[in-house]
Length: 227
Length: 212
Image (cartoon, rainbow over the protein chains, first blue to last red):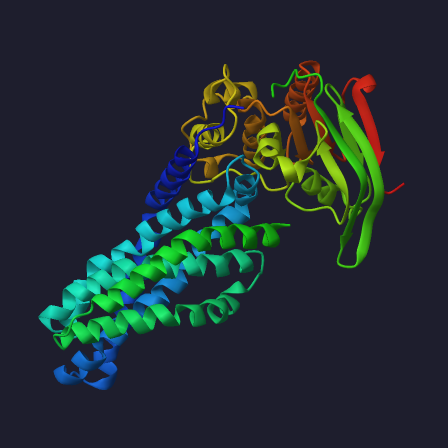
């Protein structure tokens, strides 16, 4: 038996998914625009009072990021399921959980990471205090991978369903609550000039938990969906 | 585990598959040895695809066991996966990659064939000249041939093919039959479902009719 080592398998799939994303560049922009537009709707809807925006800004940005992550997640397995390459991944001689981790990593790089790049602009738009802006970026960097990892379990469970979108939201959104609470409260706390290390440690713990457990759960869910 | 290993055999013992409370087949037993082909026939809905997905390890049988070289395939896990190549109803090609990229991806994840490069595999299925065209732009028959080229670039001794002749023309069918013939002569194994009469050396063929 001379199959490639594990890290190699991870990198091959990671690279393939990035190549595919690059060839469909237009789709990368969609969650990003969604994130910006949803956030920009709030000042239009509730009035551009800076004090009020500053108060609810962290929550708005985080809820928008959460919805953008949820909407983009649906696509993680769709094309693979439709063209049959998901079956082939299931049957290839490598642990499915490692391959799932590679898929989530590539998906986060193309959909989650761009959110981080525009977040500073949105922070300015909502007049977040200077001190809160770096914390917003850190919480997004720690939190959005958790959203991707946890959401992928839900996508794996609903991949075979014709109208899985709504069920996916119902399955996954409750699981997003801890991330939302700690991340948004970290940004608010930082804006008030208080230390936020406790929040960040908790987010890091959630990330560690998600990285170690969710690939195995995704793999198991996928086996059920495809059997 | 090379394809010429004499002990290689696929055993099914008392397989039962139930789908939506309907028993598709039960008590199914057979043995496929090196150099043999199992041709599965039966009416639509008789469980051919389910049987093949079960043999590939994607679906657990509801009863019974599948053994590869004497070991249960669920115990072998990825060792069994390295020994099998599966082409199902869906081709499994990424449409936004080129044929060459598709094959290179499969090759690097599987147990790669030491001599045969992806470009040669493409030439074998008569896709030379299409190396750098997006797979999306190939015809259905060409995409099918690309899917079958996957069989060549790993050393998997057991090929599991679900309706391999779908959308192939007579020329394509001849190519695939030749691939299958060479595979069996070299000690490989084949499990295939097809509505088309599979033209193989009759001494090597085991017939299994699920509607009987």
